Length: 123
Image 1: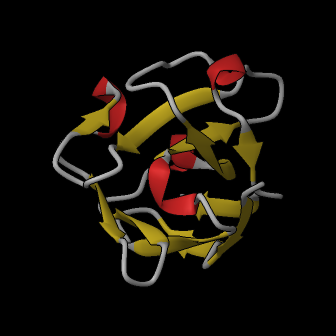
Image 2: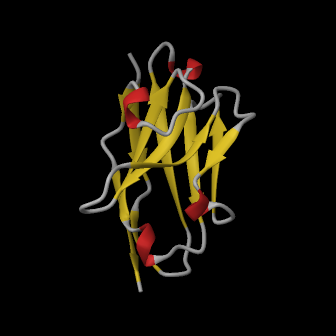
C-alpha cells in the first residue's frame, strides 16, 4: 500500500511559478514510478509529467515541455513539480499517482492516487 499526499497548490498570476510536492509513504513507495496528472473542469485527466523509480527517466507532455520540471528525492520519498511560466490554461486540479508501469499515459495504469491540489492561474 502506498499513500500519496500533495501540497503546494494555490493561486498565481500568469507568468508566475509554483512548485507542488507529493510525499509518498508506505513500504514499497520507492519501487513505483510517479506521475503528475491534471484535470480541468469538463476535461479528461491527463498525464503531464512522470519520473521513473530511479529518477533517471522523465516524461513531459508537449504542452508543458520547457516550462515544467519533475524531480524526485528518493531519500524523502517525495516528487516535485516545478511549474514556471504558468498560463491560465494550466488551471486544474493536480494529482500525484504511482505506477509500476514505465511509462503509461493512461490513468488506469496507476495504482495509487493522491487527493489532488488545486492550481489556479489568473490572467
